[in-house]
Amino acid sequence: MVWFHTVRAPDSSAPAAGSVGPAAAQPFSLTYFWQPLSPTAVDLVQSDAGWAAAAVSIALAPFLFLWWRRAGTSFGRIAGIACGAVASAAVCSLVLVPREGTAAVVGGVWWTVPLGGALMCAAFLVAPAPSPMRDD
Image (cartoon, rainbow, N blue to C red; front, side, top):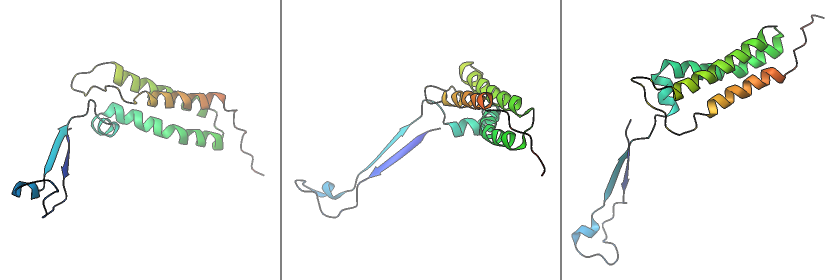
């Protein structure tokens, strides 16, 4: 992906102070190009199934936590811990293990995704077991 930006001066018919000749009244344009060191998170999720699966897993973990707390299912804690741990491990492996034909992730804040997964695992671990639902 190549990004570009164009800067243009306001169109002015009067020459700038201290300038001489017709070139002084001409507007200027400056265009510069750059290529990011690594792809953005959106690019990675759209182009790689591994990144997409990890993103979906991390995004669904808070909803799984809420469902577990409200429904009181016995397997909710295990499912939530597995969801966070697998997503964190997947992102670490996607970044740290080089693969053929994929973009390298250089720098950035990719480490926040495994950190978020670890925090979701911690939430499932420290939360007390939900009380069973009673029909009164």
